[in-house]
Image 1 (cartoon, one colour):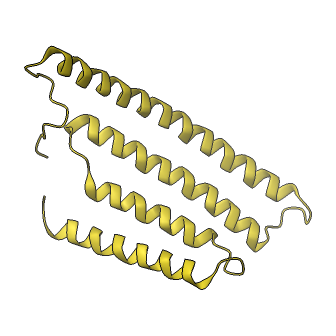
Image 2 (image 1 turned 45 degrees about the horizontal axis):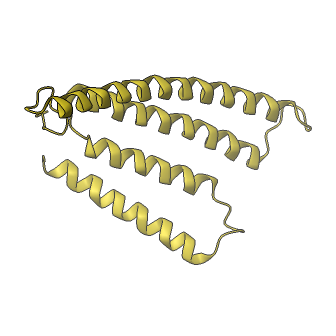
Image 3 (image 1 turned 30 degrees about the vertical axis):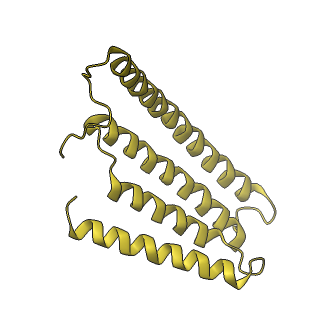
Length: 147
């Protein structure tokens, strides 16, 4: 990937150069925190799964329990995608548009999986569908053309 000049290492103004280095440190801190969130999320998935299995009826998952478990899994996967965005940005100083759109698609997939169709209005479902369509087209177009 090509390097962009969003946060150049060297700048004519020493203050701007210092601030860019400070932002890079902040991004590294965010990466560390995201790893903590990922491990916390994995622990939460294990805990949710364990609790669902121990509630009556014992060792039997209801459909709603499976959706709760899926939602917890997907939340961790989204956190991993965000971590990958942060790491890729740190390596190249380029915002990885295709990965960001893929992360947004995964977040929308999570929303669709956990949505309770009995409690949402039809306009909400149309809006979610439109966002998924727009993200899908964007992802396709980003794959067709290198920016």
